[in-house]
Image (cartoon, rainbow, N blue to C red; front, side, top):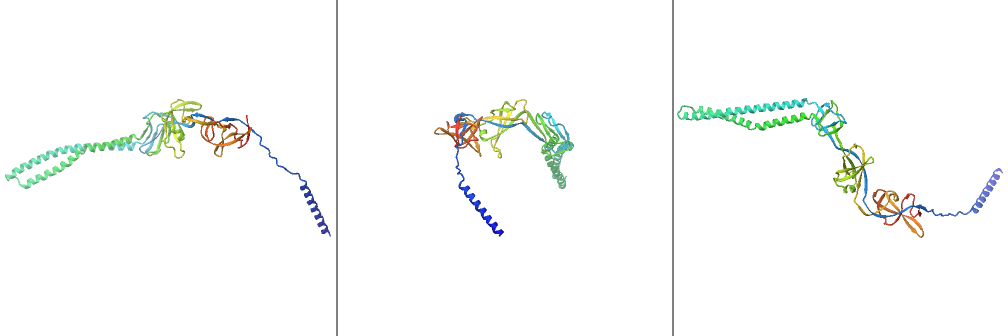
Length: 389
């Protein structure tokens, strides 16, 4: 009985709720969407003009010494003396570092001794040759005398043959001595070459400065063993400096060696000469290295400088303010002003930026005389209603 009563109560509640929902749905007010026009935005405008423009490009670089020299020994050995330190000024011919020279001195002494022995041997051979020549003359006379005596049966044939054998022996020795004397000059020259090499190697045990410069670094200490080709000292010339910059191909082709360029360093203007212009660009950066020589006092390596490069004159270039260009996803746009009846609307026009001239862009893709929004373009939309200030 209780279960039946619960069931009837449940059915009654469901019926009341369904009726309430039906009444609410029937009497719900209608909703109407109302489209409101976006209010017009106030903008400043300018006119696209044409001008003859000489583009000015600014490139930043770093000052470096005009000359930087890495020195190394041409012979190997152990460092005996380190005679200079970084920052020290040196002149051409000054000693910088020495290595042990004992072995090289011994080699030179050995070469000089061998040269002297060779010279004495040549003198000996010349004297022997003179003696052999006289001996040959005497033996030839003796053979002639014996030939005459043989006709008188006063000398045997065996005696004559013995004398002839002696003559042949002397002629053999004569040939050897003649060869020694003839080659004496070349042999002495070879010995002298060996002496010259030994002298040069001995001189190479002292590393000397090839130029007037400043020591930038010393990479060895006393006791170190250095080999040929190993960097030992770096010298720099800081009396003259060069500004090194990287330019694009378009910028580089407009330049010539020897051209005077304007450079700004720490807000001060200088003039420098273009001394180096890389023709083939760097394969990684695709830029051309430029070097601009500066002879001004008070500058030092490592300073940053800005070179101002002027390009070729662009006749009838379309110019717009930098602030008028919207950059989005790698593209550039201008907002042109279109008029419908009495109202003005924006039209987003894609353009190509050719170059920059101070606070202006040189562009293509729009017409001279077009009115464009000159600033605050980031908040604009294509087709937006605007009011001109």
